[in-house]
Length: 257
Image (tube, rainbow, N blue to C red; front, side, top):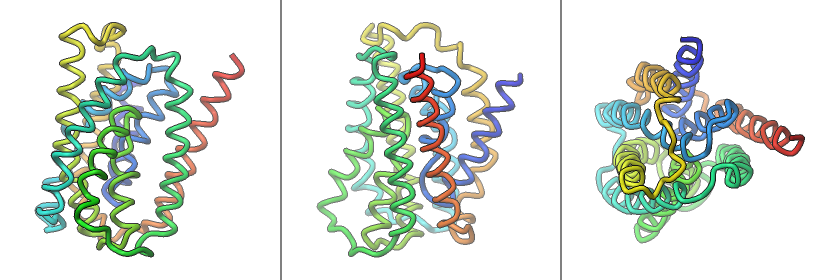
């Protein structure tokens, strides 16, 4: 029960930040799961299982607040689904202990990206439509492999290139549901086909997943409202520093061991 409450709080806070920034739920949740000793593939699968519920609630909230550019969503979602499925397949074929240091390094880089994008948001020119498809594919792949990254890669790229933040965040959040569904389906397929040899008993993390779901779903309906009022620069800097700090701490523990 203690584990459930801890991850319910993590899910709640992560989703509130994600609703305001359009990123950080997956990165934050994965970083905390890795800090609890969960293997990378299990962490990613757990986060995406939770995100099936939170992205549905968050995407609906953004749609109701008319924050979604449907043409942008249709360019991002299919490419993200393909990239995410490939990423999940790759992740489940690699030993978790070997992959953990690289995932921690990736998450630390994502923390730096969050800070950089937060400070430079809106300073570029809008990206051409032709760039949205490869952006979605890359975002989906790194999201699956790292247990998070769709927001830091896709949302921040859109905002940083000059897209209106309201529509960049809302559209990317809505597209993320479809990407998450594809990634979760790929994890299930890898498990059923025997490709994921080290899957073990996924129910070991059931309380963590349940906590992330409950906490995230409670906060998700406020996503569409938060994107209008939240101090995004302060939140972005705080989340980036948190992710970097946790990643460095976990890396130090691995090195010391």
